[in-house]
Length: 213
Image 1 (cartoon, rainbow, N blue to C red):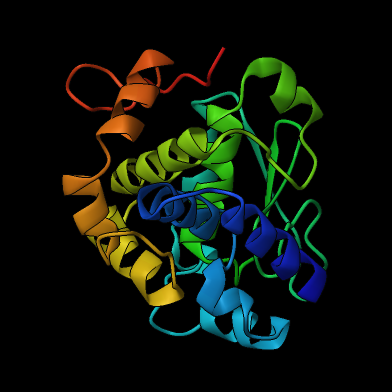
Image 2 (cartoon, rainbow, N blue to C red):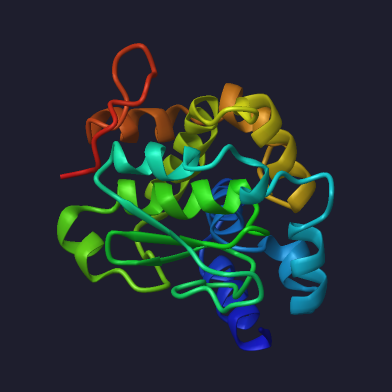
């Protein structure tokens, strides 16, 4: 945990200027536990992720997440309670990614499942085939992932974009303007353009339900 935190801090410090620094925070923050949560130990991170105020995969209707991800050609595997989650960057209960497969557990936060699923959607096909744990990609792609996960929440019964943004804020996603909603509405034009460029959103800002080529 400490080694990962050090790596992220070094990466953030390598980017000059407050604007670039803020953008990295919006991306790296989305990728994992963010600076506030990363500074805590892994037990505190897990406790935050599974707090009653954050919706988890067990709160979804049976098969809802699987049906959503299948529209993108992705597979969802739910492991048993207490089992390790393959490909989890921040360890259980956070979602994991290996190839075309998204791994979750009943106590995996929905925002985490959508975030990692969107990493698979936003990766190009060659990188997607080889992905294991760390999705890689650029900071702009990371912003696209955060943007897309909010929109996909509207396609999960009982979730919706408003609740997902609240869960992202409660969990600790860090954005320059202070909240997920403020970022999405006022500071995410580059993420929107990136998603449209790669045919992941249409002109009406709706998902195309195609993974990046």
